[in-house]
Length: 251
Image (cartoon, rainbow, N blue to C red):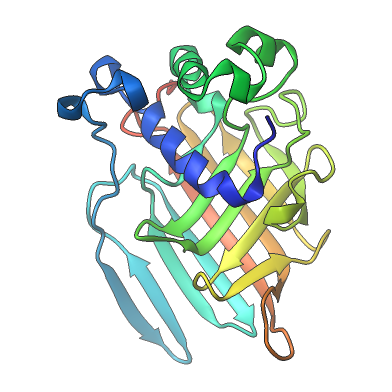
């Protein structure tokens, strides 16, 4: 089963919650009403700081994983946005234990995912994905930047470690070239911007079982403009801490 772009956010959020669960906090049919997952969205109050013509939105407080991301947007939209790491921030097979990945295959059903855990691994297919990154508002996932590896990318083409990957398209371009990523920037559900293909790249400077650090930059164009679409430039600087609160294969 290929992951559909329109369902990516929901899938990544479900798996992020599942990834950090303990044996008594499993997801789906295995969890009772009394043993529901503890990894839920925390309430994180936002602050606005006026800096000239740009409003900096700072998300802080609440229980986070320790990392954060900063989105700087210029052009047709001028803004700087800071989000603390949350359960929604990052999901990867590389940061998920084999036990949890097996449980996820059982939860989703082998018929739905196209085989058993062993068969998917043998084919080089991720259970969730090699890289699913969300620098978003926990209370509004449509607001922020989403980045993920294309569907045909294999484990050898997106290993855990430093690397540079072209931004090959927007969220509906998941079948794009291997070893590339697709992305999107949203002001809201109605104001969305797709990358201009080939205009940017994801640069991972560090990625091990403790920390993920890097940047992503691309030129974007408004997706659903009624008139002349706005053009923007997006830059994201991010740090994600591999936290047992959110991930199950931390070093």
